[in-house]
Image 1 (tube, rainbow, N blue to C red):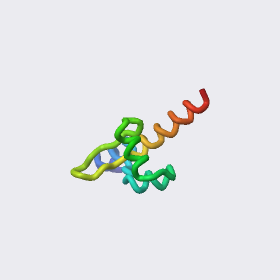
Image 2 (cartoon, rainbow, N blue to C red):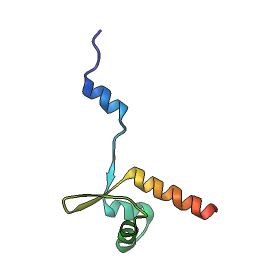
Image 3 (spheres, helix red, strand yellow):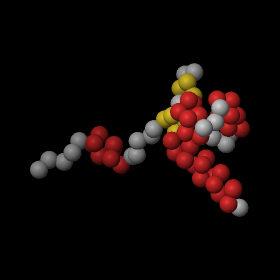
Image 4 (tube, rainbow, N blue to C red):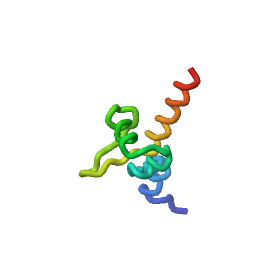
Length: 74
C-alpha cells in the first residue's frame, strides 16, 4: 500500500483559509458598507489586502462575533 502524496497530507493538516469580500461580510452582519469599513479601519475586524482588494478571513469574522458576544455578556 502506498502512502498519500505529501500535498494531500498537508491539505488535511491545515484548515482551508476562506476569505470573504466586504459585501459578503455586509450580508452576514447585516451592516452597511461604511459600517464594515469602520470596523476594519478601527481594527475590530481583521483583514488582508490583496492588491486593491480587501478580504476578511472567516476566522476573523468569527472572532469578532465571539468578542462582541463576550462584551455584551459582561
